Image (cartoon, rainbow, N blue to C red; front, side, top):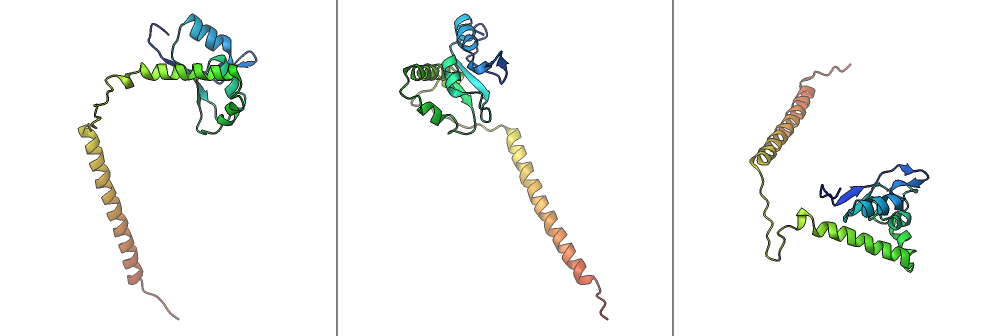
Length: 162
């Protein structure tokens, strides 16, 4: 882990005995941070629909971020512990790990107050956009011709009245 320069890991759904892997302090704090010296952050596997992947257990074990598409899923539970010094200290430590990772990532290389981000679009993206436009126009033209043909066919069809 340290030799490879990895700054983040993802925990898994599975359990270590009776304990969820992302809530196992021995695994996250003992091995990951202690033995391997990983300074970055630990992200859960997708935790939106799994009640056993508890945010308080995870943060106390050394987890830092929850992969979840519901921003309110764990906020209320953490707010219940806003006066608990152990949980608050663990959340501060998680924040430190996340900020450390961002500050030491390639995303921060060369960032300054005068920096400008300029989009450079390769030729092949322009070619794909042009192809999309051409196929779109052809599709609309084809639909128009189909509707016109169907209407003309109805006009040319003789009706028999008794």
